Image (cartoon, rainbow, N blue to C red):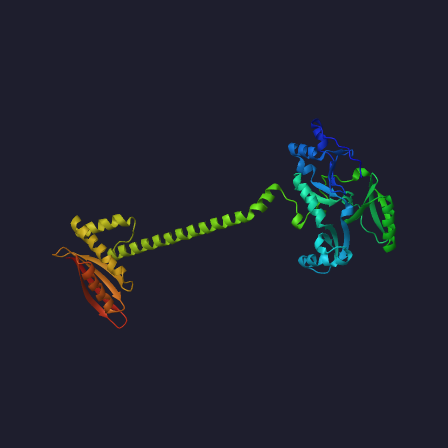
Length: 401
């Protein structure tokens, strides 16, 4: 690793902060930020300056972690449905792990047609430490990737040989062995790993790339290889607030929806009642005045008709009074249907004739009895017109006492 040289990013050198910064965790779990010259910067001061400039999320979009802390491997896991083979993945690797699978975080990068899954394995303890450190420094948005993925992948596995792309950084070699695999090692370890790979398979060719090709923390081409999945997913501050308040917000929203639904139902019910009252009023108007073809203003038309029928205001008032008096009598028994209402003038002033029908004669006679007890101000007489076993028709003659 580099010898740590602490220096603050000068305020006047803002442009330096926007170019080729590289942030990574060392083996001790400390976050280190380097500029393009390899100088180690003072972490908190650098982050504060980037935040002030508004470039923090773009310049430090990726934070690299030691490849030695991540096991990149491949394993056979059958299954077509992703949920099924993802559930089986940890147990397919159980025998190759020194600790129970519950202690590890598994990231599946890719599943080939022959059911080979490229996977990264990291202890939960390390993932939790890295993520907590990022959160504390305001880097909750940053992705975590193994350092070996800083090496661009420029080829694929050939039939006769395997190509490793290698970039040396100080005394360490970053090796990209495939699109989803790689490691970091010193020179001796690199030679040892190469011999082991050749013993297990074909020839291994090493292609050395220039150190300037190493990806920095602005890299976007490899973010799909992030270790931050499942409970470690990167999130913005707004999303964090949402996660904290999502259940209270859900219940508030639910109460609001229920309240709106109740109000809507009440409004609908009132609208239906209003429509029913309007229809019943029009029906009664047409029953009383069957010659009227069009209803424009039912109140004014009713008053005009009453005045025309009665010839004077006093008789009009008498007609309205009679209608009000007999209305409760008919509303009390919904089985009595009104077919027509007519006003007849005579020497005694006038009377209402209400044509009705019911299933039984007793229902009509009950209206006469009730009127004598509850409405003594009017006189109600029943004239039966037609009586059958299933239907009784008659006319009520109603006048003031």
